[in-house]
Length: 122
Image (cartoon, rainbow, N blue to C red):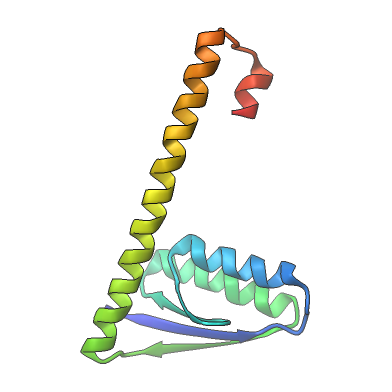
């Protein structure tokens, strides 16, 4: 698998910028290696998100360094394992939230509360 390594420095002490970059990278499944250092799999979908993250870093006055890396076989296996473990953990969390949503919807159906405001809230 092809991997990219992104490391960056933000000039702002604002957590808002750090969180925005973190969210963009997590959304696509990047693997956090250290603070402000991420491994990102290769591929078009990942490239688009990576470009957005780098663009954001640069717009807020930060510096992004992006490397194309060729990990050793052992490191490649570790990165793939970390990537898979993180995706599996996300699915577990998602599925647990689905149970809560289904229970809440069943509760609303039982009350026959079918208003637009209620739908938006759910």
